[in-house]
Image 1 (cartoon, rainbow, N blue to C red):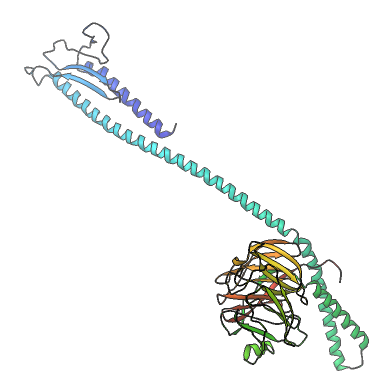
Image 2 (image 1 turned 180 degrees about the vertical axis):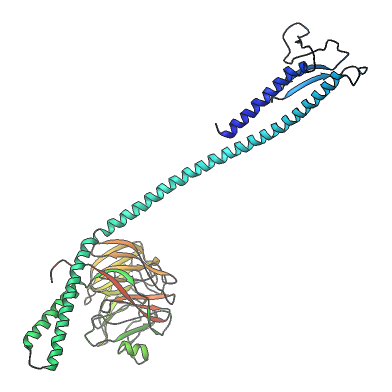
Amino acid sequence: MSVPLLKIGVVLSTMAMITNWMSQTLPSLVGLNTTKLSAASGGTLDRSTGVLPTNPEESWQVYSSAQDSEGRCICTVVAPQQTMCSRDARTKQLRQLLEKVQNMSQSIEVLDRRTQRDLQYVEKMENQMKGLESKFRQVEESHRQHLARQFKAIKAKMDELRPLIPVLEEYKADAKLVLQFKEEVQNLTSVLNELQEEIGAYDYDELQSRVSNLEERLRACMQKLACGKLTGISDPVTIKTSGSRFGSWMTDPLAPEGDNRVWYMDGYHNNRFVREYKSMADFMTTDNFTSHRLPHPWSGTGQVVYNGSIYFNKFQSHIVIRFDLKTEAILKTRSLDYAGYNNMYHYAWGGHSDIDLMVDENGLWAVYATNQNAGNIVISKLDPVSLQVLQTWNTSYPKRSAGEAFIICGTLYVTNGYSGGTKVHYAYQTNASTYEYIDIPFQNKYSHISMLDYNPKDRALYAWNNGHQILYNVTLFHVIRSDEL
């Protein structure tokens, strides 16, 4: 039992004792003889105690005293006849005692009210404490569940990072190899500087052999680092502001050394003219260009230039066309079976972006959607010469929910939107036919991306953002193959 309830019990017990004392002691204090009253029939005794004076006409009569159900004292007093002297000593004594009894009764009433109020308060506090105890239990249980979830998430992250340990070990070995290359280059530089001062003092055949050997080793190292997993995207670099809200621009990743032409296609439909700029510098600073007229208007912004040809989707069809930019002739056309077109399965921004053509380190790709795959993204590897579909992967990502997409090293990366805050949050690995949700933010500087493509030669993303042509550098996590250099 709580302490407040114990205190209430003590108060009630004390009240009962005071009442009992008054009922037994009050008549004797005034000098009255006490007798027990019996029932008129001589049967059972009354619950109250009756007292009668020796001479009822001479003094007050304390007829009875009793205790009610709530523990209060109740006294019955009969006044003497009016002929009695009001200054009688016993009368004064009785009057004083009666006043004391009344005062005590009032005090008991006050005490009783306070006790009842305190009891209600204690009961209210007890209910509140029970509620708090229940809430504390809930908080404690919720805290345990939260800790369990955190532990599970940390464990999953550790399981994900554990396979990277051997890769990091290989990175350490590769870092030593790079330092060795650096030392050899410094040595060769020193030798070349000495040759400038003293011609003929060194064996040129040996020097040429060392340079060739170093070049081969560096080429082999770069080949090992060719592909990797996307881990970051840089802030955008605005190259130019031109054209309408929608369009595409690109360079040829297989262009020969010295060919730095830029290709520019404004709009997403009902246009046939492709601009050719001689270099990136010309594209940035001038409007000097050569115009090429395509045999058919294109659809969307998913065009690519690859090995001297432009690949595009013919407007209002699922036909892919390969057009040679040098001879200005169609080299090949082929239909993508079941591919949606004419705004059936476009990207979230619309624009007849049903079929998106892409290139990466592995070649030419087509990204689209079909009814057979419930409108989800389909990836097809294409032969760049015949346009034949070599292999197809069906994903579970709805194409209409994708902002844009691009391929790096055979992995399709999808953005969650095209306006406002944008991030890459879905990746599908064609080499393993698996997918994962990721979180790689990048700055959507002009708030409306209608084209986003990867160039494996530049290791950069080309984007058309609300009438601005911009570039993003990418950061790749390279998985080094285990074969020796």
